[in-house]
Image (cartoon, rainbow, N blue to C red; front, side, top):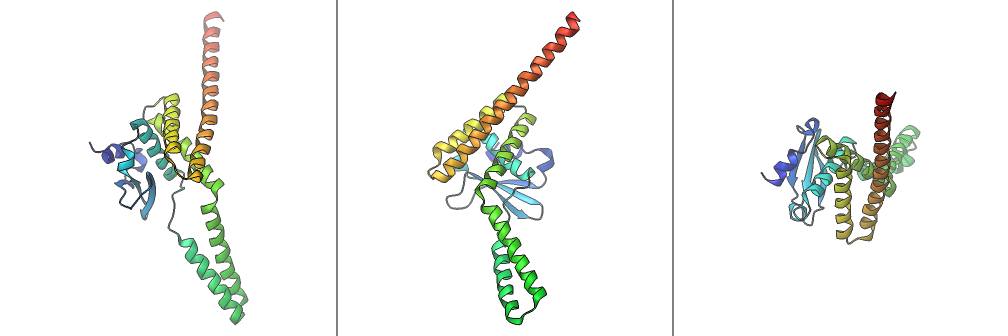
Length: 211
C-alpha cells in the first residue's frame, strides 16, 4: 500500500467522498497543506520527500491536524479579497467623480469587507487559534482511530517538536512552539480529567462494596 492510499484510509467516513490526497507538485512545497480544488472538494497535498523522514505516528497526527482544519472550516480560500479590495477602491474613486452617494457607499462597503477579510487571513493570533483548534480535532480523530488519549498527545507533541527542529525561519518556529505549549496545557487538563474520572469510579466501587 502506498503512503497516499494509507492516508486515505485515515480519513473519517464523513470526509472520504470529497477530500482527496495527492503528492505535492510545487517547487519547494510545504510538508503538508490544503487546497480547495472545486465546489465542496478539498485536496490535502503532501511533500512525500519530507514526509518519509517522519515517524508514522507523527505523520498520522499531522495528517489529522489538516483534517481538523477541514472539519473546522478553516481551509485557505482563493485570494479574492485583493481583487474585491481593488474593485471597491476603484469604484469608490469613480463614484466620488460622478457623486453618486449610494454607489459610493456600496463601493466603500465592499472595500471594507475585503480589507477585514484580509486582516483576518493575515492575523497571526487567529492563525494560531485556528491551528490549536485543529490540533484538538486531531487528538479526537486519533482516539476515533484507536489511539489512547496519552498516545495521541505524545504523537502530536513529537510531531510538533520535529517541526520546531526543522524550521529555519524564526516566525514559523515560534508558531510551532506556541502550538506545542498549548498542547502541553491541553494534555495536563486531559490528564487531570482522567484522574478525576478514575477517582470517581473508585469511589463508586467502594460504595458498592462497603455501602
